[in-house]
Image (tube, rainbow, N blue to C red; front, side, top):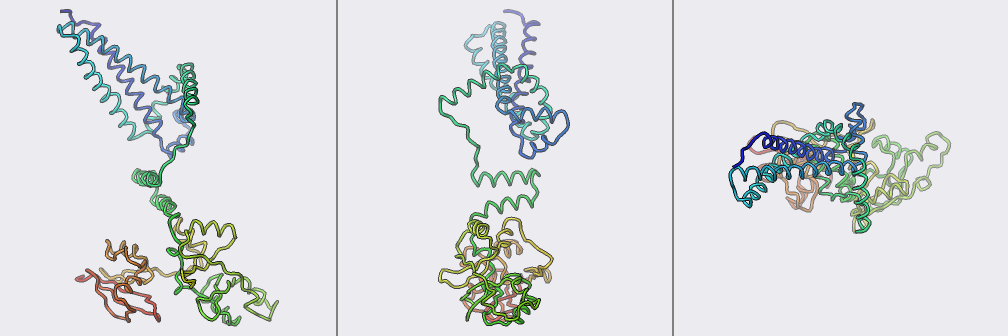
Length: 427
């Protein structure tokens, strides 16, 4: 039985020092390569010495990775070698079977490396990659300089094998669901503002949105009849406040052109007196209601137009869609100094809401705090839900019950519901 002396404890100390270096390299790898785009922007704009050093690392990612992996593997091999010497000393001291010593070495060393040098440092680095990266940048730059010949050699070898195997450089791609998850996580971490998250989410949904989902419905369209006089048209423009109007002949389903308010200027200035609407109307642009708005946006850009008439499957007028309607799907509601649009709802009292019948079902449910109105029906608006529920056009002040709520018809304009009072029972 040999005594355990100074050299044994020196080996123990060396083993744990090597574990510390292994942990350093493992954490450095996760921190440097786990930097978010926003973190990288901060680094590129930073003037501190740590940011300047870190820029050198992220600007040459392949060589940085080779440096870290070379250092990590070197210390892990050294740690395993020292562990083998320690195991031999322990077996000699306790007179153990060498085979048992090998088993002990594998179990203990693997466990220590996994816990102390792999899992723990990587979790710490994941929590704050920017902070850790700044702290390790200086050491890694120095090591990268010292290992430069080795790094260049391994870099050349990997490039050679990549060419032999026919591996081409590819850009990392993500599915839509993965990108949505990244956006959610970024917003939770505070890397994205809520408004930024909403805009990015709108872009994901943009390609799936149909014209009929964003159009101004036919009942809300302001049109000019072909037989209208100049005075009638000017009075309508003053009242409605828009710059472009569909022109119809005989009935509102027969749209024959578009009128631009600016085309009336010569008549207002007295330059021309013989007004004829047929001379100033322009060609109308028609689109089907099931066209995707992404495709329509490209058509608007190509043809330099701002407005299109939406037609249904039977060729009748379904509504109107503008360039502004499309852009609002990405950036949200656009209000200018001429917009006089009233809010679609307001709270009259606790448990009581006065809502516009045009409100989207999802918006109504969000206000009411749950899926009060089913979303799988053949309707998209509050008014459509009432029609579907009753199977007829209800009269003013009529009450319709649905679940815990009472829907009272406040206003009806001809065949169209305009305002609905929503009351929660028992409130």
